[in-house]
Image 1: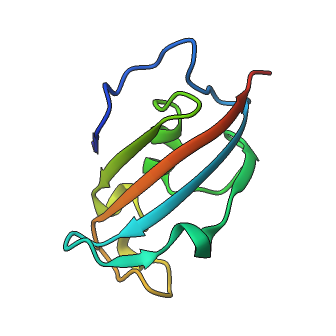
Image 2: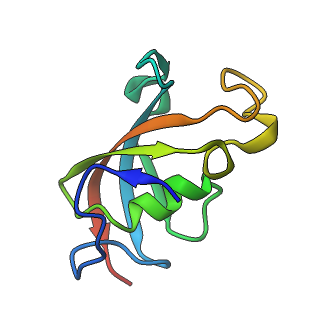
Length: 107
């Protein structure tokens, strides 16, 4: 599993698979060094379940209400796995994601 800084509960205010969501996130290592910043990632707009995301990020987005922020601590298998992202995240590297949900539109 993973750790999330909020209550970690699904509510009527959280997104479900198939809902439209706008969010932004930052990725850091366990020493809090920024790997990918909010600015670098930009605002993402997607239908949950129709976008290629790290499994832990997809799960976390379903636990964060609109307008709120949460911190996700992801083991490598819920982040970028045994290969990393073939860029800045190495293989089998646990990561932290700071996630802000900007908008949710239920389908």
